[in-house]
Length: 76
Image 1 (cartoon, helix red, strand yellow):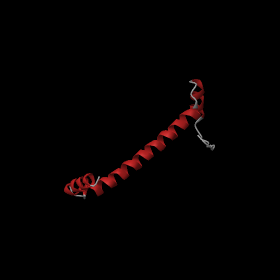
Image 2 (cartoon, one colour; image 1 turned 45 degrees about the vertical axis):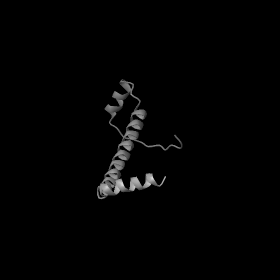
Image 3 (tube, one colour; image 1 turned 120 degrees about the vertical axis):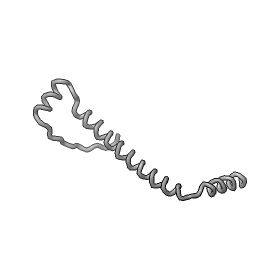
Image 4 (cartoon, helix red, strand yellow; image 1 turned 30 degrees about the vertical axis):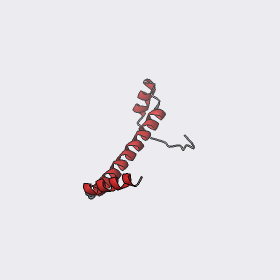
């Protein structure tokens, strides 16, 4: 994982009691939640970039794609 940093979180005392009562490891829960949030943010960013590229590709006439593909195949 590499270097780590320490973060702190304030939670209500009642929540802390319930976490202990049910044996929930808050550190692991928080770590997994943060990892999942980063994954979602990356996926959203990737989707936005894909949409940008798709918009650009839509502007290219299909005939040009076919022509370029044929020329590429014939040059091999």
